[in-house]
Length: 315
Image (cartoon, rainbow, N blue to C red; front, side, top):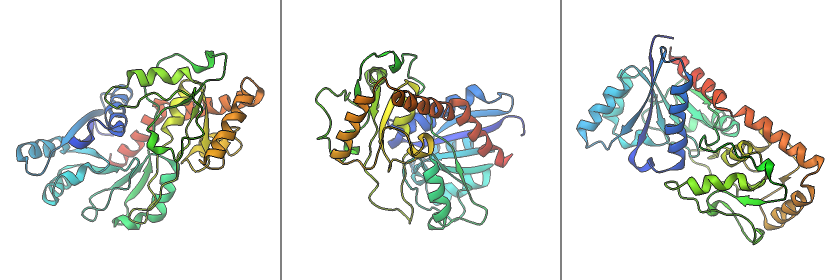
C-alpha cells in the first residue's frame, strides 16, 4: 500500500442530519482514522455540493484527487455527469455505500465497488447487480455496520428485573398494539440523541421487529443493517426480532430463543411474554451469549478491517 493512501467519505447536504450519515461517514471515518496506520492512510470527509456551486465543485474534485472515494448513498447524484467524469479521471477508485437503499445507476462504470452493510444485501446485490448496469469487473463488497460508539459502559445485565424497550422510528413497526403500556419508547431525534442513547441500557429486552420491505428498486430488494441488534448487543441486552429482519439469523442463529416468525401483533405479544417468563433462566443466558458473540463480530476493529480490504483493492 503506497504511503498515505487517501480515503474520502463523500456526502451531500440533505444527508447531514441523517443517522446513516452520522454512522457511516462521521463515525466510520473517525474509527478508520484512529485504527488505520497514519503513515499509510489519510482519512477525510468531503461535501458534495450542487452542480451549480462551481467553486465548491472544484474543491470536491481536488479532494478526490488520488483518493479512494466512498459516496454515501445517493450523494454522487448531487453533481452532474461532467463533474463525475472529472472525478472518475482523478480518483484512485470510486465506491458507493448503498447502506439501506438501492442507489440507481449513473454513468456506466462510474462505480468500481458497490458497498453493502449486511450479508443479506451482499447476496441480493451479487445476484441482481446487472440492474445497476455495471462494467465487467465491478465488485460487491460487504462492509459490516457497527454499533453506536457513543453508547457507554453501563450494561443492561445489571438490571435485576425484566425491562422492555423499543429504540427506533415508530413508522418501522407495522402495528404497535402489542406493546405494553410500561414499555420504554424514547423519542428518536437524530440531532438530539443523548437522552435516547442513555435509555438503551435501561432495557434488557429490545424489541427490534421490522415490517418487510414492500418492493424492489432496479430489481434489487433494499436492505437494512441490523443496527438495533448491534446496539442492544453493546449494552448487554437481548432482542425480540422477527425472521424477516435482515441478518438477524445470520448473527444470532435460527435457534435464538427470542426469534419470532413475523412482526404481527400476535407474534410480538407472544414473544414478549415468552421473554418475560424466560428472564433470568438458562434460555435467557443463551440469548445473551449469542448477543455477546454478535457484539464481537461487529466490533470497530472488525469493521475497519473490512474497510481496509476494500480500500486495498486500489493499492
